[in-house]
Amino acid sequence: MFEKEVDMQASQPEPLALNEPLILPFAPEAVACGFPSPAEGYWSGDLDLVQHLVRDPSSTYIWRAAGHSMTGAGINDGDLLLVDRGIDPVPGKIVIAVVDGEYTVKRLDVIRGRTVLLAENLDYADIVLQEHTEMSVWGVVTWILSPPKIKRGVRPRR
Image (cartoon, rainbow, N blue to C red; front, top):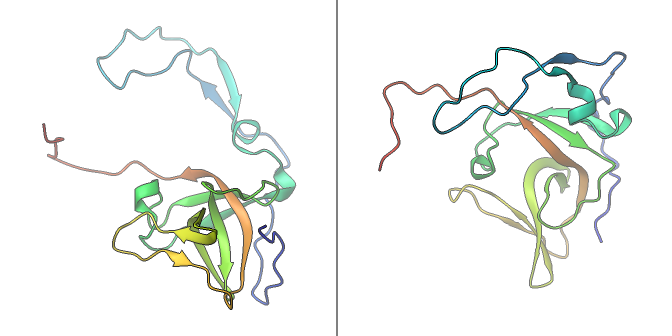
């Protein structure tokens, strides 16, 4: 249903060059987002981030997001996206698509039998593919890497 390969004249990103694992200390329990819980003060072991985040290094790429059309999906301008070319692009997944030769990141869907690339910001239009539109899915976004947002003096409204 969705073409996976793309014949682009623009340069393609290179797959991740992962020669060694990226191992960081792993805390023993989850951190509370509600009331604080007592910390045990020890580490439960190490976690290899590559093993945890990457299904297949030979088909995984990093893209930098540009723009604001996907903020509702947690993708902000400048975020890093881990993209796997080996995952099937099924409706509901966030994908890197090539539409008429241009790259875009959107949520893939099928509505009333038509392929639609959904923006996740109401200020941006969805892309409803027409018969003459050329579209292929380059890869599926598997992780969004972004720094926490800095907010000072702001509390959620009750």
